[in-house]
Length: 428
Image (cartoon, rainbow, N blue to C red; front, side):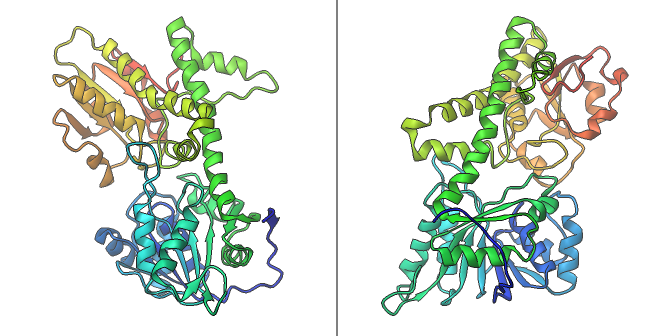
């Protein structure tokens, strides 16, 4: 179908109960926002801790303003969580889509969600895949459900009633999810035009941005393209940082000067690229068409290699010391969140620990959520500690994440320490 802009025009959803499968960084905010609009929302998650936390009105991770939304929705009876998939008018699947060792998408969680939905689904129900996925995944989700329910079809035909299948990728920034879920434009792709329209009607209950309708495969690809675009541009900055370091040039000064050109806007380099989106999604494009995705593959390889350059810089700084203390500041994949998925900071700490067993590595972070110690599991020479104590003990300070809290670090705390600043945080 050609891309269209959705206009509600008095359309009603006919949906009163929504099941959100997966209560992670996207599923729980989506569930909370829908519940806040008066829908009865049943959140489903395999993690008992998550189910318990949500039912108590708590949020099991850090995201500004989400706690208030969840607590309010639960107290009003609009949001509940459970481990079993219920009957509902609409299902939103927001489960992880990691990649395998060969960088192709692992759809095991999507397929399991489909198998759990199949016995519950009824004619006319709406199934929306929110998980970021390679082109064809929404069709695969439908195929699994319909193989288990031969009485149903994606389009009514031959006496079979229709179930509506659509893809609606999230396009939000951690730390701003509760704002951007509402204000950002949404792309919705259906296996049929009717499915796209039905999904758009549901999202229009809270989405203030434009809603753009297309087919499912195009919607799937659009999300991947958005993140691949950013990945390629970050790779250019990261490659510049390596080249500049070899030439004795301050890369941040270089980029600042180059960006004075009216048509140049180079991004900032860092220790790599993390998070479940930018570090993962480009590989889905590469796996879909390996022959014609050379630039996207190269960008991924550049960004994946950046942690090794940081490790080399730290090892150069500790050369000749038998038992140095390395203080690493930050573990998250970006500033001011506790999300360590695909974090280059975690990878750097793990590589330093493995390659330098005689070193003591102290990790300072402003966040002390349950998932942070898990990222360091199995590393006997790594400890998670307060920032001030970690700085005091340090021979080398490695700034990995530009958390706002680290701006309170004084020059006196860094005096006499060797510095590896991957973010240009302490430029003189």
